[in-house]
Length: 118
View 1: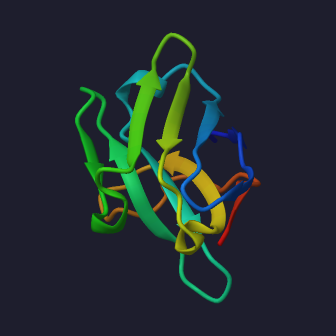
View 2: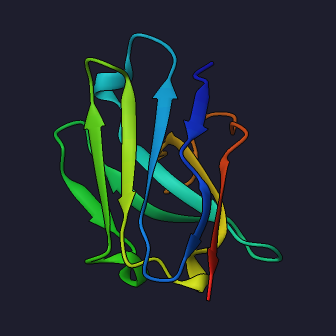
């Protein structure tokens, strides 16, 4: 079972930036498509950014141009640089292996809280 440890969240004012990191267990990280998901209170978890094993990124429309996903296969790490943060970005952020349906393929970690104040 793959495990995830997310970090880097915090409280930031609108317009600010944060960088999230996720360390992934196991020795097959390089072949996974990885994603960052978020879940706001009262809402379903959504995939906001993903990156394939060949480093092709994809983003949901609401974060395009503001968020950048990257990976380091040597460190088993996937990161999310978030700029121009807005209050609607407030959520718990999780990383996971992206399944064929877009959902998380493994058990979820604890996530990291991002709170953006207006």
